[in-house]
Image (cartoon, rainbow, N blue to C red; front, side, top):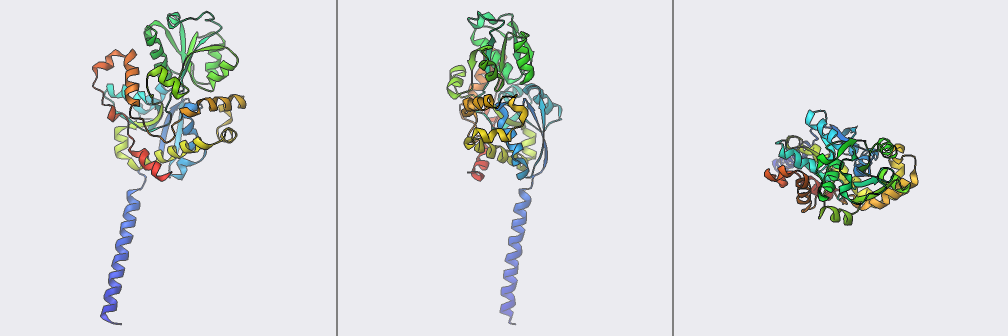
Amino acid sequence: MSKVYFKKLGSALGLFLFGLTAVNGSLLAQTIEKPKVSIAVGGKNLFYYLPLTVAEQLGYFKDEGLQVEISDFAGGSKALQALVGGSADVVSGAYEHTISMQAKGQPITAFVLQGRAPQIVMVVSNKTMPNYRSIADLKGKKIGVSAPGSSTNMMANFVLAKGGLKPGDVSFIGVGTSAGALSAMRSGQIDAMANLDPVITMLEQKKEVRVIADTRTLKDTNAVFGGPMPAATLYASEAFLQKYPHTVQALTNAMVRALKWLQKVGPSELIKVVPESYLLGDRALYIAAFAKGREALSPDGTFPAAGPKTALAALQAFQPELAEKNIDLAKTYTNEFVKKANAKYK
């Protein structure tokens, strides 16, 4: 064989090896740094966190190479405590926690939006407050929330502030997000409650409560907060996002895929996916509640530009000390991972 042949062969082999090295390098660059991830959530059964359940039940996390362990707590504040305490890597929780924690010097960042409306509803008991007329009537009353410091507590505080009351003017009681909440309202243990579906729809159906503030639709959310209000997210510490970017991307991919599935799924198919316990013994009611609040789910996981400002204004309404803090909203969320996920799941 000629020298020219061997020279060409050597060149081809060199190009092949170079290409193989480049491919391997690319694959290594995309390696998930932390395949086992623990996620804390406060009230996993709620529609508020439905995308998380869908991603888990349909195996979307596994498809991304992740082994996800989800721990369920009584409320969002408890899930946040798990993150701060180090027993959780990520929280499926309310966006406003990113603002509150930055004010405390503990930066966390939300990286995918699950809900573009809070879906939280504030109601008063027809049993203990049949003559309710205005927010002022709640002074001195007992108000149920999923857990003190949670997003339901924040919603209640905001509604009270709009009516001229301070958080200290009422007593807040943690009642959870399912059977405990129903029992507390029906037994007269609480006079009002801020909670979510399917609990609220169940109480409404039996005319046990009267709605005084509703954020299950975009229109109602704008009426309550004066703008778009980011709701459930996945958030983690800034350090986690910097140390495990491919892991965060994999989590985001799974969540965006779940959000897109929820945009087109039929109710009958949905109830086959969620655990039976979520239905609270009434499939028809669950389907009705889903239909009512479906538009509250984010279609693609993207944070709206005006949303963070609305959330900050809501918090400042009952936490005036926040006005003295220099909150950098740009650091409370990122759409970087969502953009890549949407490019993957068009």
